[in-house]
Length: 251
Figure 1 (cartoon, rainbow, N blue to C red):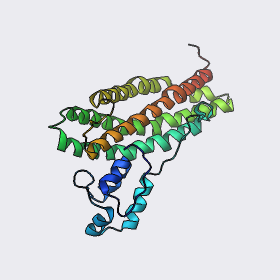
Figure 2: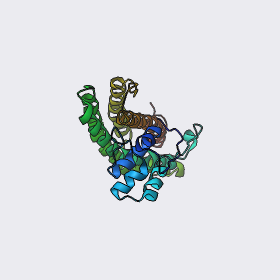
Figure 3: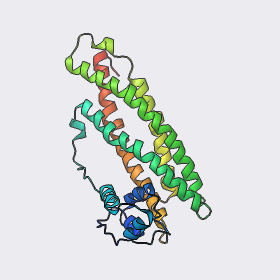
């Protein structure tokens, strides 16, 4: 069910649409349309019963499954530090702000209905909620404090300003705190969720909601790993090295 090509027709069954691509579940939740066990009805019939414009919902469904391919060969290491920071904010931070609430609701509903059958869901939900509470202020800290300071360092470094060292405080402490504490906490949470869900592998007889929930968690995992790679291995080390040069210090 993961990102399979699928043409949405008025006669397509709701469950089949979600089974073909889990991302459509978000649209059906928006319109309060059941897509799991009670979703075995053609889209046109459901829209007629609920008074929904089938052209509009079809447009939204098609938009939800639109895939944008990002080449693995993108030269992140060569990007200007400002552009890299903007990329992280506009791609990864935007994803987290829009999808964390969506995943939280999906996980809550699925856990509520299936926790007796799958007791491990209680721990998965607990870990996710902790991750959710940590990530939002983490994004704010990066956007309002750390990234602006990194941009300031890059500008001072590139301009070879004689007074640059006066502008440089100690980036190392907040960056290392982010890298060693907050990011490490995220990694621990993700690894534990992987263990509990068998690496997001639903059982063969899993319902549609089960598959959607695990697919959304896998998508979050992938995004977080790429996000932290760009910061821990490229952005932060480059900024720290610039800071060291500006301060004319040695390690």
